[in-house]
Image (cartoon, rainbow, N blue to C red; front, side, top):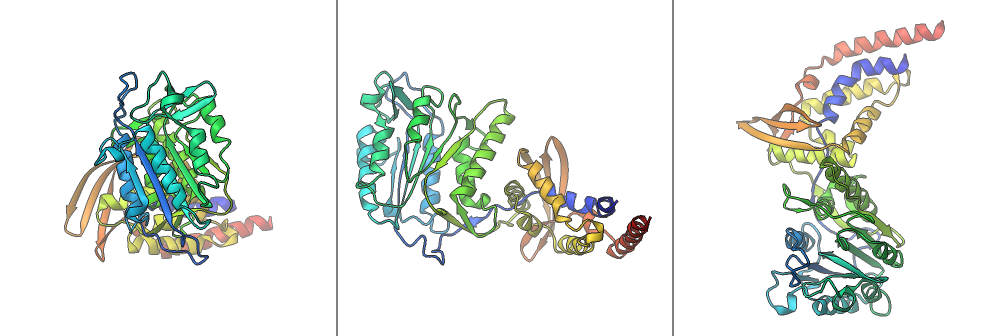
Length: 421
């Protein structure tokens, strides 16, 4: 009876708000109060899309993934890495020294590892390309690798591990993102090697026996797409303004798996963090309300991240006010006490769902946006407030709070009478 009382009054309002989404955001890196981030930050980003060996298939989005990540990391409003501290090796390299060959990869990684000479420093390694195994040795394959002789022509993962370890590298914060599969799928040797990496956070794009898949509609590989989405702020689940590796792991693994599963395929990234303390890669500065479509994506990202506060911030002023008044009414222990649990449950269900955005129509300070959520097509209404587009849910805005108060009092009396029986 107690739960039924507030469910009847509150369900329509909050479920409508929750089904609309949560907060993506722009990012800006600044030093934390505890001093983390004051050391230097280095990165080696490698992408191989075009292999010399004809038996190795070309990879459609490897270079696009690496270029986008490089822009993200070096953007002062996003990743905060200094331009001179990031080395990009790809098929589109400006000169031969920046092509993703075996020797260039090892040379760049060794040089950056030596520069990361302080425990306060951070070093990041990203590889997008093929992997290969020979015996118990597992390798990353550069553009000049031979599929028949990966150990001889590739970059041994064991050597990468050595270069990221003392005495070659003394950075305390080390991160490796490996968007590759070996022989068509992640191998046992690959998984075993990553288990030997100490003091390093390692992200792999798929588990043993799985393949890494592309998202043609996004123009990126699935793993890399959600990696960058998370770094941009969608992974900031606790809304503390920072994206740490724990939040990033959860976002990348859940979103990649959900999107690929929708297509009848399997790809489950895994992460092994052998490092002490939180490692922060980026800082969030604010949501994007620049258009109805941007606001919807902001809300949807926030719902995926379970960020209820950011979700509600995307609603119009009147909707937020009505929800706040309803929450105050429903917070009475007599009527259940925790109305926010309804939106939390909706957000948990939304993490495995996807949304598609259709036509956007703007008419002055009002707009509509066609969206499809969980297979259901609907039209969302937006209004412009202070230059920001906010979702305006008529079902919430038109709630008569005073009448609701009377209903609550009636239900309170019913509960009290029931308890006296």
